[in-house]
Length: 467
Image (tube, rainbow, N blue to C red):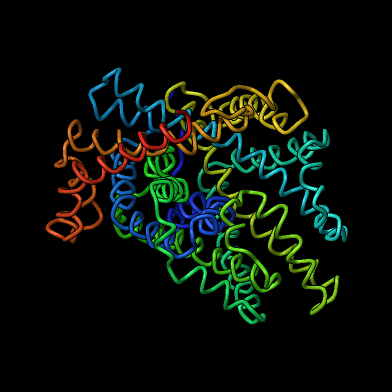
């Protein structure tokens, strides 16, 4: 029996939901971290070039594959290749990748829940302590918070495409944007914020190297939900009366704008509240920039707005990050759920329960990877370093696989589905696409420049991380 897959109620619903999947920790956490590590503006310029000339064509290809087939990544690759087993296995990468990304995403989102609880109870000073974050990631109570988080996420997913995902995005995306703009306006009025603005917007090309290029592309892919099967799946819920090129352009613009403003918030804040910031120290920043460093910045605001005011601002910021993480987590988990519905003919409720069990199964060792378990903390070794289970998931499925999946999508669309089929689908709902500059660029780049860049970055990343 064919299951009811659902559909977005409107083009706006698709744009907000797709932007909700794209706007997440990649924008509000990873982007400012990567910008701070790689010289600010130099990284920003490379990132924008990748979004415009590499990522956007891949977005069009993935959404078109989904809409043409009305299937998840496995079904899309299979149908468009006349049931080729090789391409069907390739589609499985688009299922396994978002599932494993959801594993480390869940762990980080649980940390956000704990921080929100601490801030809501007036413990900003505690969060500002150097030892707090390292102690927090080793607390057994994390499993309780994880249970509550996953219960909320899967309750949303039971509501389906329109009643769950789209409804969540329609509320949280505008809220997130307003909160971010308000915080940016506040930070830019502070003394010495101009030093952070200069670091962020004035390029230092001496910091540009292969690592910066690899990081910019990986960040762009992750931020735009490419290479995860998300846009193929969301494309399968997209109306055939609406334009894919213009909708994808809106999603890319919204996502990039949020990332830009997140950098404009965090880097000026760092310099405003610590005028003695050494830019060399920023080159070693990580996710701890959010969990360890930013609480100190917010605490230092008490001289201007008092302890309560500083706590409120900190609460708003972490709530902002949590909203972004929640919308992305819901979107990521929808991909394997659509696979269970399409390929295994499960009801949505059963597919959600199956996915909840599997995610919990993998999230447990990921949570144990920060000192709670010696086995999972020192899980393996490669690249001359000891790696935890969490590190392995992050390195393989975030740093490495995304460009490879994007590469296979390009090759598939050009040499198996053929450009005629892709162009025909992109012109549905958008008669202006035929003969446009975008079509000409896509026809030239998708089989040449784009896959070459993606495969080069994939090989370089494998060498850098694993060899």
